Amino acid sequence: MPDRTVPEFEGELAPVVYRDRGVDLLNQNELPERTVVLRLTAVEEVAEAIRTMRVRGAPAIGIAAAYGMVLAADRAGTAVTLEDMQLAAQTLRSTRPTAVNLGWAVDRMLRVFVKLDGRSAEDVRQALLAEARRIHAEDIEANRKIGRHGADLLSEKARVLTICNTGALATGGYGTAYGVLRAAREAGRLALVYACETRPRLQGAQLTAWELLRDRIPFKLLSDAAAAYLMARGEVDAILAGADRIAANGDTANKIGTYALAVAANHHGIPMYHVAPTSTIDPATPSGASIPVEERAEDEVLAVRGMRVAPSGASAWNPAFDVTPAELITAIVTETGVHRPPFDFRRKAIE
Image (cartoon, rainbow, N blue to C red; front, side, top):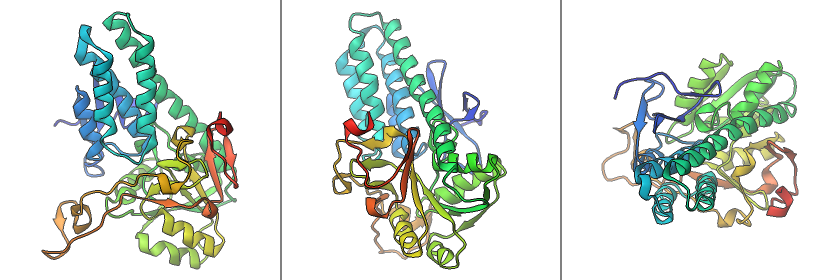
C-alpha cells in the first residue's frame, strides 16, 4: 500500500477522514516506522480497521464508524434501506465493545437516516456525510475546550504522567488528555511528560512518543512498571488519562494499567485526572461493574510486534481495559468543564 500525505481535518492531524467517496485512514499499526494511509471504500473495511486497531482511541473509533455508515449508504446507492443501515451498524458495533463512542456515533447516524425517509439517494448520502463531518468537527472543538479546562488544573512547570495514546491519533484531532498537554505547553505550564509505554500494544511508546516528538514537547518514555517508583520519588505532579467509557457514577474504563496508576497515585497523594468528551459518558451504564471489558488475543502478550517472547506452550490473559473506581479519580475533565466527586452523570445531569 503506497504512502500518502498524513490526513488532516480542520488543520489538525486526523487518523481518519472522508474524501471522494472513500475513507483515508492512517494505519497506526505501521507507526512510528512508516506513515501509511489506507484507502477504505466499504463499511466492512472500516470495521476490520477498528477491530485490528489500525484506528484506535474511543473518539477516533466513533468518527471512523460514522464515516463507515456513509460508505454503507454509498454502496447501497438508490436502493438504500433502513435494513441496510442497521446491518452496517451491527457490523461496526461488533468490532470493539468497551468504547461507548462507537455505538453513540452509529446511533446518531441512524437517527439522521430515519428522518430522511423518502428522500433521494444523493440527498441521503449528503445528509449522512454532513452529520459524520459534524461529529468529527465537534470532537476537535470539544478537545480544544478540554485542553483549556485541563491545563488550568496543572501546577507551574508540571511533570505529567500519561498512559496509552490520547492525542490527535486517538481522536478527531488535537487530543483529549494529550490536548491538555498541548494547551499546558502553549501556556508555559508544562515542564516534562512521562509517557508509559503501555503494554502489550505499546501505544505510548509507538504513538504518544511519535506525537510528542512531532509537537516538540519534552518527554521521557518509561516502562509501565516504573510508574509507581517514579511517583514515590516525588517526580510526578499529575496523571492524565483518557477514557473509553465513563459510567453514570464516574467509574471509568481506560487502557489496561490505568487502574494501577490510580491506586499508586492515591497512595502518593497525586491528582488523577480522566479526560474525555461528553460522548464518552454513558448514562445508561450505572457503574463500572456494568462496563463490558474487551479481551483480546493472547498473542498480543506472548509476542511483541510479531516476535515471540514467551516459551512455546505458555498462555496469557489479555484484557484490553480496566476500570478505575470513581473514588480514586480527582476530577473528570470534559468540554463542559471540570467535574469533581461525587460524580453524577445520569442523563439529566449532563444535558
